[in-house]
Image (cartoon, rainbow, N blue to C red):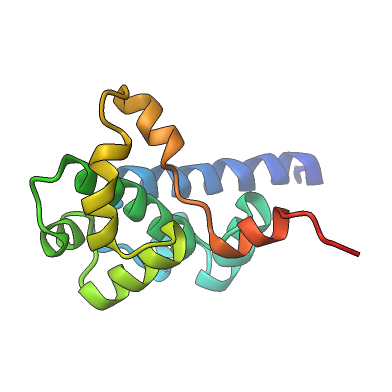
Length: 148
């Protein structure tokens, strides 16, 4: 007995949720799209297309956003260097980490580390996490009103 398109869509969404949950859990581990796809029993290209359609970004972009969010929290604590934070969140290249951090947050990690502790002082961590959540620069500019 074959499944209906709606049933197949639900199975696909459940598979994508499992991939997203794995990224959320294992963001500091060496993850790549090929390994995620292999574990989900689909091709890397198919996973990337489905993930982007469901969540609006590629699995790699989602992974890097999770890593940068965690890096922001570690940098706000102020007890680790930028290099230590880079490796703690699973990045293997300080250059890539700094570039991606600057792209998502708007300032380099060293500047963020200096300024963020004061900005969130006295704020509960759950509120600080929401307030400081990174927004992609291209998304931010896409939501700004366009002048005619």
